[in-house]
Image (cartoon, rainbow, N blue to C red; front, side):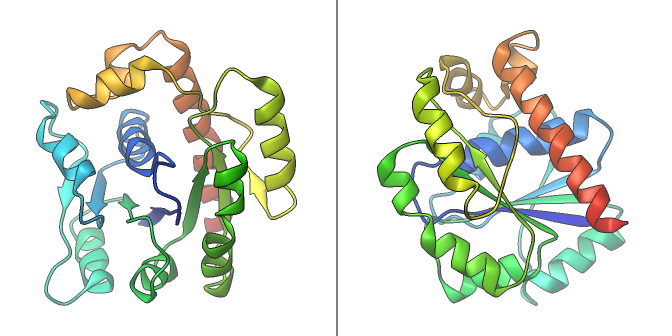
Amino acid sequence: MQTIVVTSRKGGAGKTTLSGHLAVEAEQKGAGPVAILDLDPMGSLASWWNEREEPTPVMAEIGPKGLVATLKQLAAQGVKLVVIDTPPFASEEIANVVKASDLCLVPVVPSPHDLRAIGDSIEMVERQKKPMIFVVNNASTNGKLTLQAVTALSQHGTVAPVVIHTRQDFRSSMVKGRTVGEAFPKGKSAAEITGLWVYIQARLKKGAA
């Protein structure tokens, strides 16, 4: 079993949307069974899941023995991938979640303010010596600003080659407990999520090799 942690100290980076979409995409592309864990006290990912009509991915909760024991239990139950959504702060608790991961995704909105806020996230992941991928998320159609963000992020680590742009279909699909791939399968947003998952899956396989 492999574990992806979606983390960022900056609120509004799109962690929850990315977590839900990647979990569903992975399940649809045969990488499941997939489980999701919502560690954010806001519970946005859990709320989205409760609106879903589809039974997959499954929602899991951390048991009384803690995260590591929960992950071992999920693996014993046949789960192949766990996607963990985290709250927007860099605490010791989140550091321990990162420590238990195989790959960390750090979504970053291409704006000067968001770029300035990534330092704590980078330091936390590097301290746990875990592989990290930046995902340029909620990007506008301003290609120049996005390119500047990719250039800046590449100085700190690996940047996913697929940019996720902000579109109304993300918001409308999440409200109804779905993803853009389920609601608008032929749209540009769905294609971006598919491309991102293909890249992430390749990175996971490379790490497992």
